[in-house]
Image (spheres, rainbow, N blue to C red):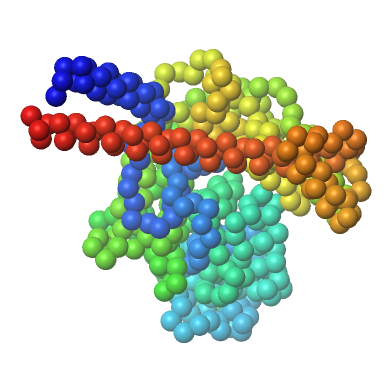
Length: 455
């Protein structure tokens, strides 16, 4: 190999080494999991620390019961008496149950323990019928609550997760639902006790059961002292599903795993949970920063009108997690994202994302998922004909024919649509750029190996 060629190759390698070290300055080696879908979030802020297919819609099995428990805590009381209806005991053969007897009377709290620890489907059905009047009535409320939380990837048809058409969830949504449930201290009891006993009484026989999540059982090889709550799930369709809440050094993390099965490795879901906790607790540290002032204008369709809202965070300070290897953030700004695709609204509730940016305005990470306050600004009528017209105008504007006569509200919607398309195009171009760099780096190392073989 000529000396000039060697020099050029060395310089090229030096450039790529420097470039990729800069590219990975904020990156940390992530775990490799067996699960088909997974997510790890900070329970305090909803910040995503790790994700794998986290927005894929999949059957959640008994992780459905996390939402059932949330609604029971919000709309019922632990001491409420519940008479077990016949319908609650009529479940598919072989499904998990503690054998409740129609006509027995139990407290809401005892049924929640039975629902969360041994995953009793009869207990979940009894709670649902008590709160919603029927399984279908309660399912309607479940979907309403998910919409209120600004979650769009899930649909629930029953309170327990037994297989039924159009019953699905995402790992992301399940993690955010768990985060909401943790706002109630009693959730750590219902989902965190290693066992529970319902003593016999004149109104029912006695029951005793253990938690199925083995990270919480000291006699298990998968016991993890960091685990404080959990929920198991399994059906033929869903495979093994697992939710675990872990705490260490003042941090509380939520891990969700869906379809976590391996023919070669036993207890794959528990091994994945440990890997996620090892990663999350060791790789990040908390930092508190103020949100920069300023509100975001968000336009949405309501019935036959387009309504503009001014959105602002309910809190002006956010504690988020930074990679431990990074220095304290300087010349960085924490602000509410104005990307309409990162703002969700339903049932009068608004949610947005706080993002950390460098001095050039580039996003470093998403620091939190925040509830927002919405102040209604303007409204404009929005009919089918006008929508088609506006979309046509917006398409022309992207080709240079910018419409100047649109009103304030409709102009905002058109601009938001245009900006959304631009952002998606830019994201695709960035992904293509990184892929090309990876390919070129591979070619360079292939040439090195080839040269070494010739020497």
